[in-house]
Length: 110
Ligand code: HEC
Image (cartoon, rainbow, N blue to C red; front, top):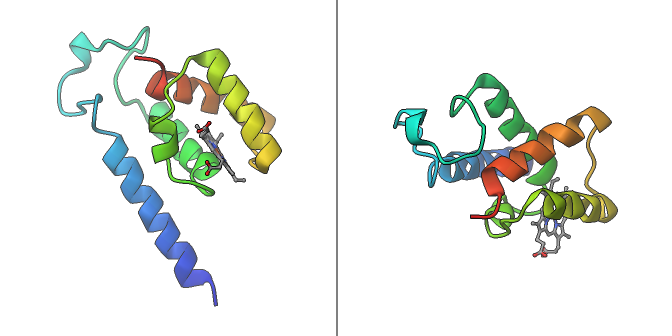
């Protein structure tokens, strides 16, 4: 009888995303003085979808906490994704760049 557990996991994951989406992000403030490289508007629907994707692909074995504690550049995230794939993570080939871009944008080096 696992379904309730799954539901709980989903709820926890969702709460994490809500939690982590606000620190540097300031979704209430206008995106004017955003320090992030060339990101146009702060939270486009595409970004939200990418966040959901990362949650689904990277939040099942460990919390997304892990990502926030592991800020690094593009090469680093490419490397991490390779390692995660070896550990059993998987995603569709066309999801790879979406996930990678999201990781670099949100968990890049400070
Ligand atoms: C199949 C399970 C699984 C999935 C899915 C998964 N990981 Fe991991 N991840 C692990 C394991 C196992 C570890 C290492 C053990 C630990 O520290 O808990 C780990 C550790 C990490 C770490 C810490 C590495 C370190 O050196 O401290 C990061 C960062 C990370 N994962 C990122 C990701 C990202 C990004 C994704 C999605 C692309 C992802 N993980 C998906 C299993 C997974």
